[in-house]
Length: 241
Picture 1 (cartoon, rainbow, N blue to C red):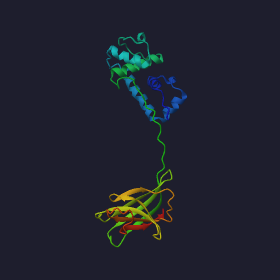
Picture 2 (picture 1 turned 120 degrees about the horizontal axis):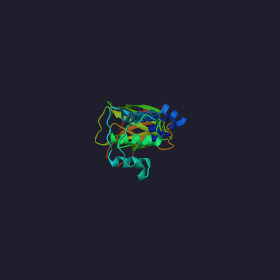
Picture 3 (picture 1 turned 45 degrees about the horizontal axis):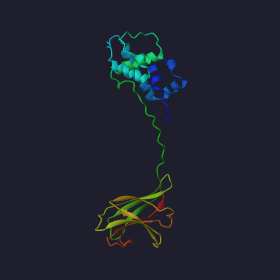
């Protein structure tokens, strides 16, 4: 989690109180654009307060109430006071902070120095999936205009999934199912129904892709039979990426 410079320290730096910041604060400012922008913002406010061309008016009592609450002062420590000339002489840090807060409130800057910087934890870096095998899916004789592609990827957690796309032909009255077939067609594993032109399917844990290396997409009727219909649209063998 990034530790930014305290907002009160930034306000004091904008007022010229360089010794209000520690060496670590100065080092952070050198590399943090956000904190430097806050210092610039406070500096603009204090610049207005120091300008001889700006006529300040006495703020209403509720403004000082908000300043008092923000700085944690007792009620008697922040009674409303008339506007006076802002002298260029050095003032105690707490008074400078109070002056900057009052100017910001009068100017309508965010409703005062009620500034909360959310400490956002950096999201963990997640490695992208790695392609481990792929296949060009060729049409079967009864579907000459079809084409397709299959890509097997390994996720950072070690799980495998295959993305399948079939193009060039319209689906019939049934549905399409994705399979992995053994090289000698002695066995098959159903991965699920292909809805639309493409889909992604998790592979069963422990499945040997060297044995079940053929990706097959079949046209299936709504007959309640879970076995392969024998009507393959496209098929292709997986090879290492």
